[in-house]
Length: 109
Ligand code: SF4
Image (cartoon, rainbow, N blue to C red):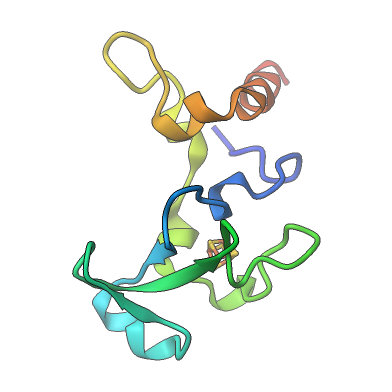
């Protein structure tokens, strides 16, 4: 299933309660001078600012899309759709019912 990125407002780039937006793979950390070490994650991370990735532009688009981190390239919110044994969604989808609506619209089309 394709994620509804064209209809979403970059929810996956907005993390409430975290001081980082993306954990970097060890081999790519040097490619991001903006990266900082997260002691909690024991890894280099891209920081967030005011609840958003520092690379998210005012139009909710990734300003470094062509060179975005590996985890951003791999992320697909639809994997979390009814992913739990009892049919519940991932935490991201449970926190954003609007995103579930978008996925269900995509499933019907
Ligand atoms: S680097 Fe781009 S795709 Fe990754 S979280 Fe930040 S804005 Fe989103």
